[in-house]
Figure 1 (cartoon, helix red, strand yellow):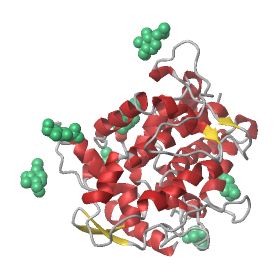
Figure 2: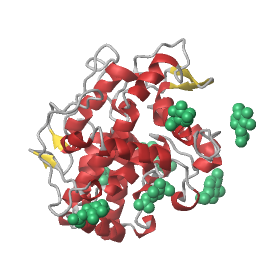
Figure 3: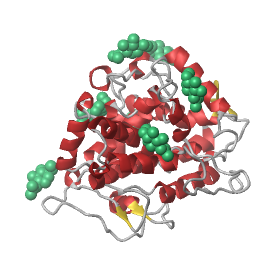
Figure 4: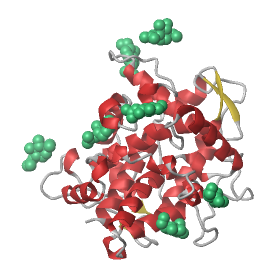
Length: 345
Ligand SMILES: *[C@@H]1O[C@H](CO)[C@@H](O)[C@H](O)[C@H]1NC(C)=O
Ligand SMILES: *[C@@H]1O[C@H](CO)[C@@H](O)[C@H](O)[C@H]1NC(C)=O
Ligand SMILES: *[C@@H]1O[C@H](CO)[C@@H](O)[C@H](O)[C@H]1NC(C)=O
Ligand SMILES: *[C@@H]1O[C@H](CO)[C@@H](O)[C@H](O)[C@H]1NC(C)=O
Ligand SMILES: *[C@@H]1O[C@H](CO)[C@@H](O)[C@H](O)[C@H]1NC(C)=O
Ligand SMILES: *[C@@H]1O[C@H](CO)[C@@H](O)[C@H](O)[C@H]1NC(C)=O
Ligand SMILES: *[C@@H]1O[C@H](CO)[C@@H](O)[C@H](O)[C@H]1NC(C)=O
């Protein structure tokens, strides 16, 4: 993953503290969604564990990217992705994930299990280790929902040059950041907010998201509205651990509603999710969740025309129309909530 490292390294030099992998904005949106689904009891425990987040998980959502090249934490760099075998995973022709426990020491799927287990109060780890596990977990569940973190093809798309909004970039970057930024701009278009935001714009500087943060609230509200409406009946299926799970973006799920709702108030803001699983190595089940996300590489991500600007035409329109990015962000958020509600309950 040399190329991936190099690109992120250059990015760090020029745009400190702008960090990639879903871009920090993607991670913050995911965390903001997840937070809405925490039970009050779990939310309180999150507050205790992370006083520096001031009750806002968006604050810590990109931390794991900020520390991954420091000497103390550089061993975590391979935890941000999963390397598939080119023999079985070669999008867009065929897509598959071949994870097995212990195959490699550090990878994204293993890391989610590791930090789920370390966050568990029964782990008897120190307060600080558990707080750190929480920060890693929020980030890595986010990374799991970026399809290009789940394939080795051309270094997760880092090796594929593409054009987006007239700029030369690569496939990985547009899925990490450019598409989300464009969507955010589109939602800010009709507001009084200056819509000339670009990737290296200071206003995307979110080291202090509450005071001066990126203005993604309209976009976040749109995603939350989709969850209240067209996705409402399938939200519960998103926490199921099942290899048959489909992350459809065109038809509603037929999974039975096996969620644990709070009995008192079924209005959207009050339903609490927890995990709904048969068996896993921890409270999470990334080995199942990852299957349909990897499939998206065959269905959508790698179906590009190398000659065209991917911010226009069929490629981008399909992502918008089928709400591919919004759904990935929403699903990631729900899963963070479900895992935390299960572990910290
Ligand atoms: C992490 O950084 C230290 C100190 O710079 C270096 O010795 C070590 O090789 C690095 N490890 C990895 C996995 O990059
Ligand atoms: C689990 O997390 C701890 C703390 O960061 C780390 O030392 C250990 O290497 C991790 N193990 C795996 C398999 O990721
Ligand atoms: C912004 O307003 C225009 C004109 O009313 C409308 O066509 C467009 O859909 C709006 N954009 C968004 C993202 O709502
Ligand atoms: C935004 O960009 C457009 C097109 O590049 C330019 O005409 C306009 O003046 C810019 N607006 C601001 C507020 O910078
Ligand atoms: C934004 O980033 C700059 C470095 O580019 C940093 O000096 C500044 O403190 C950051 N702003 C906030 C609000 O944290
Ligand atoms: C957390 O911070 C983000 C970024 O500023 C903001 O959009 C979100 O509304 C905040 N959430 C809460 C619960 O304060
Ligand atoms: C349920 O939640 C909604 C939204 O927060 C609130 O307006 C309503 O009063 C609540 N109903 C009950 C019975 O608590």
